[in-house]
Length: 366
Image (cartoon, rainbow, N blue to C red):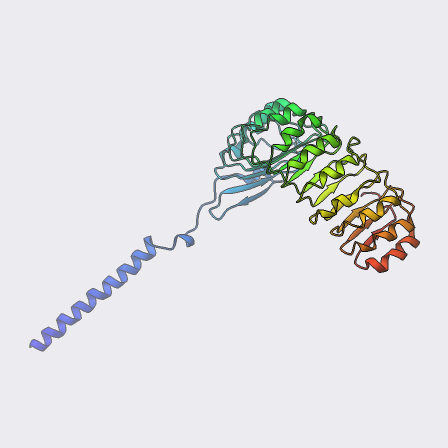
């Protein structure tokens, strides 16, 4: 009898243990599932309003990137103001309004904004002043639609975290750039065809983290370039179409240890002391197209042995002259279009530069 009771007692405990096991597993299935496997509802955003847009979401379903390019009649952007994690917005070429920018000005997570070719004014840009996380802002007045002036740029001075600012083809003066002096983290500044001059060179030299600077088509001269030698982090400088930048600038540029790309197209340089740049081991790209260069400069250019790209088109160099470039063994591209060089000169040089594409027949841009 005692044996039977013992068996019943053991059977009872087995049933209890089995129930506990099933219960634990059920609880885990119901409440302790791996958070990574739980489906998250996408952030409410009606993408049908923006059928031409490209939208990117993060793993939680939140919109982080929005692109709407070249739209002549885009819908209101008010809905973007409700997005809590939006970081990047590209609206280049779209007919947005200043009112749309006021909506974007409420997106405090915004880091990058491309408004090139948008019909916006100072009032719209002022609406972005509260974006403390903004790192990149690109504007351009090339097509005449953007009308931002110094007044609008001054409001950007409050966005001290800006690292990239593009203001090409806008009526921005020295005063406008000086209003950005608080942007100490600035790494890229694009000012092509603006109204800046040598007077702002000291201010520019104060952006000690600057790596890329475009001043093409401005009133800059060699005096201004000399002050830029203080920018030791500078890797790219574009002073093309600056007639006031002449041979005196070459010695100043030799003081930029990290310079890798230099654009002197249609500037005032000619036969000068190009060998002074030979110490810049980082210099791999040089454009001196459409200048007064002649064969006399070839021996000094031949000392720039780190070059991988050299454009000496629209100059006075000849078949005989370019033979002196045989030492540039790292060249990938040599452009000698619209010069006195023809196929015979190219054929004579090519064996020494077998890995180089030598272009001597002009091809109009597409």
